[in-house]
Length: 100
Length: 491
Image (cartoon, rainbow over all chains, first blue to last red; front, side):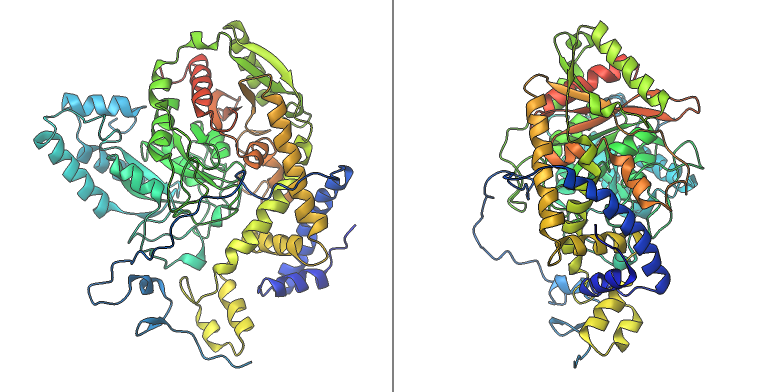
């Protein structure tokens, strides 16, 4: 059985790019520990040779032609998709400079 | 009351008779919404909706000679609520998350486009659990939604705003989304009809993803016939969602209208023994068993069936759904959309930048991302994700076997009626177990419905859960309508 401790929660949070406070870590140690303990019951089942069901549909998905369908630009000519950008510069998404 | 009519048919008849116009109806709904303290809505599109309603009111007189064009525009002048997980061009779409507090999408979900093309009016965006993660609607960044009639109780989740809004007459019907029960549970708690169609029936284009192999859009309404009509309008293949199925859509509205109690005759109704276990409220159990007896006395054949992997449903779901969620929610990086907090601008590394941005997620969302990241991580994938996906296959096989013998399976929607605010929010596992009866149909991609059949001693609604084979919405609607009639619902 997996030991859900603070180090594990911190490690996984790091992988998921989440910053947790000490209180949050403690809370998740408890609640995620409870859930994973419950999930242990799956080990009671013999699933040898069972094909995993990874998708909601059977078989392969329908493909469509790879055609660009432009989104109508704004009245000032800028791409509309930039309306959602936290920050934009000219015709692009602006991000802070990063070193490291 | 202008806005307490039960069906779209009744409203259309009132439009025909000239006793009501789409504009009057829309205004009345906004008055009700504004005087309510249920916290069911996040964003109202009043100007947009009133403009639509005004145009339809003019059209009714000038273009259609005062008669509703039911064939061409089956939802003519019908005000609806849209769960805030679905995008609408130019309308704020938050998914009840601080992460998307400022998000105004440049495109509209296919389901919403189809409803509006059929004449529907969108009143606004409904509150929900953040990113549709929850069973009580207590996980919204915009506050909990209250139960429509019992203010100290939850409406169920995650489509809690939709459940309360329909039950409290804020709109004729609403859209919900269902990943493990998020339409059916609030429908049951709020005393309305909720329908999750077969996975692949309705395009998910414009539905902000939680768990892509499970997510499905569906209607929440006051009657089976309205749910059937909305479902029929939204269903069908969409080039923008490659999982939509090329399967014929029936005239489900007519099916609902034409169904009589007599249609119970010969209906093979499966009752899975695993759904009548210890831990179910007696009143819930009695209500469902009493409805099964009624079906039997009207000529239905009651067949005991077995779904042996039911007890593993919650475990399986809370590995698969969170794994998909952890992947889907990795897109919230603060670069292309969403809120970028000022602290993020002070970050010196990219990882630090992401962490500051992702601090916008609420506690339950973070919990599920951590669980999912864990289940997919190196060294644990086979033991958790792969194992759960195998058990999911077994659960689907259970249903295939059961449907060899029956047309439809019935059960309670949930072990209890609406619980109190705060009652389960401190114990996530307890909260997750609320969904034990709705999850299996989601895992197998089956169409399912909640129909109110009774109330408990406190006046809280009890819903019957009906499940049909894949793409057999016709049978689901027919059986749901029989149950609605037997329960003394909409005539």
